[in-house]
View 1 (cartoon, rainbow over the protein chains, first blue to last red):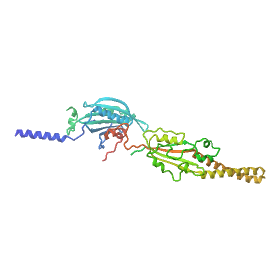
View 2 (cartoon, each protein chain N blue to C red; view 1 turned 90 degrees about the vertical axis):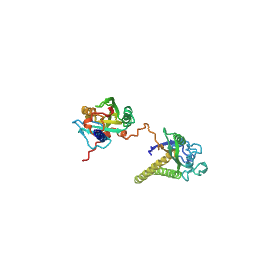
View 3 (spheres, rainbow over the protein chains, first blue to last red; view 1 turned 180 degrees about the horizontal axis):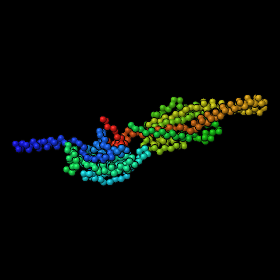
View 4 (cartoon, helix red, strand yellow; view 1 turned 120 degrees about the vertical axis):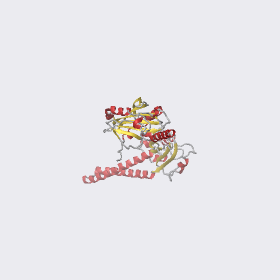
Length: 175
Length: 227
């Protein structure tokens, strides 16, 4: 009887674990009070938030485990810099809040004669590519730099878990 | 298929056609100094026979003289115009001093897809205009003579007529000069047509839509959520 209860409990746990797969975002990000998270955004954005004056932070998640961080960093840089004509202003190593190593690329681009700033952070984890973007007109981006950086630094690459509020800080790539 | 069409018009200074020499106004230095223009024959700008466009050359405008053998007794005054379509990958073309040299030079830049050389016969028009001009000048001379001995009332009428005749002379001289220029300078219109059914890009792109969508335009194009 006791053996049977153990088996039932094990099955329940496994079912719960299985059910949790596919629920929630595969990452965690905090929205500051200066920004509003936008709901029902069309793919490919898994998250998008913006300030009243047009500074946007967004996250794309791409299911692709075929390459490493160096590859994607180079691909993004080429795309933005050489094909879209943006100026690469700064490039640096970054670490997400959960410790995942990534790359940050800061670009400048003129739109209708006005300067804009476009930041991209790339993380590779869980067999996915996490592309964290922030952009807006340069004066607004300058003004909101602490807010944008805070938001981008809050990112955790988490598991798809039903219990994500509890385990949000757990990163799959560390498991 | 994306095609890039570049039209370059080369005005090649060439000689008046051989038969035009007797009809050329002596006052036209370009006509007097210019060597004869090339006839619309395969030799013009041409590669030796057997070229793809050789058959096209045979299809020149009906009535166009093919060479000295078919030239009529009356000296011919022809305005040559050539249209060529070339498949090219590099073009560095410039005007050439002579029609055939220009054609030959242009044709080196690509495979001639289409070649159309035509000649417009303006002999009758030129001759008619030349006769009318001579008559008008003679009329002007007579009016000027009459004016010298005319009374005041008659002089006014003669002045009016003299003005009209002078105006006619200027108009005919202009038309004659235009014709002379067209005869002396052949027009070559060249269309460079890259064949780019399988274009090679300088920088191959990863076939990943999300990479293509990166950038401010997509990021800042925020759509309003439906309620």
